[in-house]
Length: 346
Image (cartoon, rainbow, N blue to C red):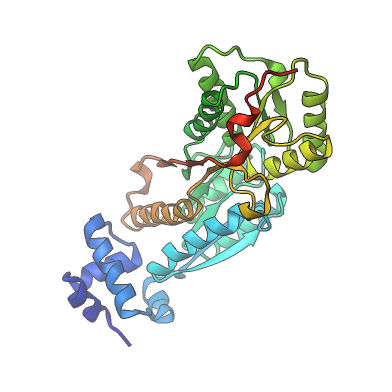
């Protein structure tokens, strides 16, 4: 088996530095960490996790709680988090709260006794009780991913929701659209609120008036999304020429609703959605999407988590500032938002 001394020689650092990188107990420079991690990959180093756990009183395990593992967005985050955990000799336990806040609280209680740190994608738009907040503060470090729940002040990693929504709406404006509707998931979720704010900001920048009739609040359920599309498309005069969906689940439901109502994209209405909708090649026309760096979000969240674990180990946690990491999204322009849809509304 490859030893830490061999890793140190390969990376050109001391054995103590290698130990610090693997355990996350002490912060090291990005350059040194990169060299050690590269040595781990090159030499295929496998730590003796049982021996290390006995020596350090740590579990070498992290946990992540997601609200719905069947949504393609979350496994991609898990993949990035798992890779970052493995680079530091940790395993990642994945739990699915099934969008239940009660189950989420039970899962967090379970993980608190068994892991060194927790990644949390909160189940929904719930306000956290003081008891739950206190319990989290007393346990291992927690980093929120994608969504930052109300009442819980902790580190977080997600996409730049404001900037990503602005990017989508500016693109539609550049295609000649002025009546741009937005359809959202649960509007009480903070990331949905931020995306609505980004939508409004992009319209204000070019002097397009904000119309409540073009803001359609929905959910992650097909029935709610269809009802919102039906009201917005069949009752609005003039009709919007473009539609922006603030998440992939709502976006998929909106597309199904558009097609069922006899609309096409981009012929009847231009369409842009947050997130990739499964395999884009299955959709004709192909869908313009705001693509989140899901793998990077998961990977970066584990890095933040290990920084916090290091703070706790060195008893610096009480004075450390909360970290909010925001990563840029990418606009992938495809057929659904092309100029064909930039026709006057009837």
